[in-house]
Length: 216
Image (cartoon, rainbow, N blue to C red; front, side):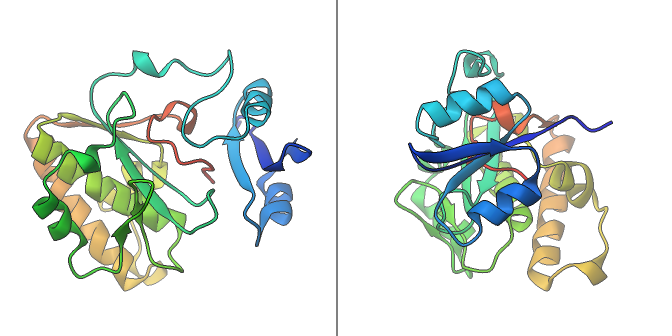
């Protein structure tokens, strides 16, 4: 049985709340700049709202302790800020690893795309991209950061990307050409990473230090 999830949404201090399904949450936040995020613990969701619904840090006494995470590269994609799909890649202490690779290396990764590094230090995709595509590209950047910075553990919270797409489990007829292109790039990079004794792990979005908010 799937675990119960709770969906918190935040417009301002007087207009926020928690609902039990994504369908309810989507109806409330669609087309707005509301912040929203999923939780497996309702009390943690309420703590997040009470603290202003920040995407930058975990909130509340019941929030997971990030300092217990192992050394590695963590990635995430999110749309909760209301400006489109963003990608963040950090270490276990939430330090932005995109700031630590060389400008030349970052420029090479952005070549032939319409993506930019935005004011928050994240990779901003062009309009129209899905969060799943963002997670895929997040893994792509994480693999490149791990190679450049000599990390041997990569963690993210997308089952689709980690357990399926990056292992070659996908149907081309259901996907856009750009998605297929990056799936194939990630497959090769993951094989190389694991051949060199690298480890890829799935973690909960609630403890991901690269967390960008809502995970559907």
